[in-house]
Length: 363
Image (cartoon, rainbow, N blue to C red; front, side, top):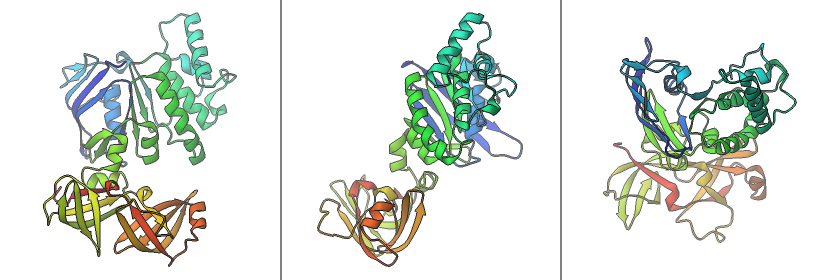
């Protein structure tokens, strides 16, 4: 489906709520687009409008040359849009078996054809032996696969997934992220996924569309948006751990020297005039720590620091530093133990110039 194209430009408002604006939302090719943002930003509303489960107030939705919505004059029913939709809670029919749930969307096909398609889906998703079970007899991961199988069985041209892993416990979510990404690659169906989970977005998506208070505030390749947020709002949404105010001292040959707190930093940046006020954005995973200053020569930013706090986050440790300004690093627990890190310990924080992203404060 490399020639697939969806164009959506519409507004939708519920009584007393914000206006949701899907402005020039484009999905092309067979990749995975992630609709990302905090709760209440309008992600599910956008998805439901695309699915035909909610009707926009104004605008248009065009998919594959077909007009699904045009200012209320044209409204294509959900059943005629040939798409697959997986809601947050999967919405499996509790009284139907796995096989019957998967076959539900195959109306109009003969019994033998339905049976073959169900067998194909259960085999592909590892559901063999479960065809006669009902949803209550399945684990959360199995229910998710059944919901995906039902959505895919009718060979949709577009797949819509609303928080597909949110109903699962944390260990199952972690295990199924990679599995779901592999399945989506195998399908090669254009897919739009709604999530507010950063790890889910990074693991599943090719492109990212960031929503805030009903508006699209940035879009682009997933890693590019997470690494280089367009403004302070996006930096907050994508959870950049360190965002500090500063000022440009000089710019030359693609490198900016900036003052942040009592420290000068060097960052790769577009031309910036001296005196420009900025926010310096640094991801925690881009902050290396060392107890041996001689071992590391490449990072331009070598910041003597003191460990202020260490907080466990699963298998990782969040290290809060003071290096003339507050700085966050994320390390594995074995790495912390190897360096004998503890509160009050001196350490060297190392940050490469391309990993410091500058956002003009006026923006």
